Length: 150
Image: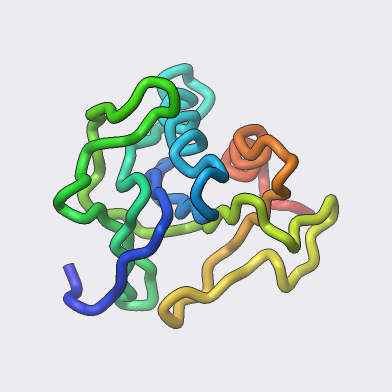
């Protein structure tokens, strides 16, 4: 793993070949969305999902890709609101393919092109802003399973 990088307040879930990096302030539902994605794979709504990290994610830029990993102290654990801390299988390292911003102030019904991308550590990544009053699960599931927009 590259030595440079930083730790961010986020969760990350590998969904197929790429991970989603879920960002948002405390209490916006990062862990809840991560758990919902893991459950979606168990229920067959997603082909694959495995936790990378919950609450804190180490991110690195390498060869034009953004990589995500869990800090060692929280590897393999997720907080499920109402149930507490749970142990789950985890992926040690994943390439980030989508950033989900929860309670995003720029979330709109028809997103502006500028809102559909973000830059992290010099890497441009597709971005999905989710409004504060919107349930993110169905939107994220659609983003992961539907064909790209026309």
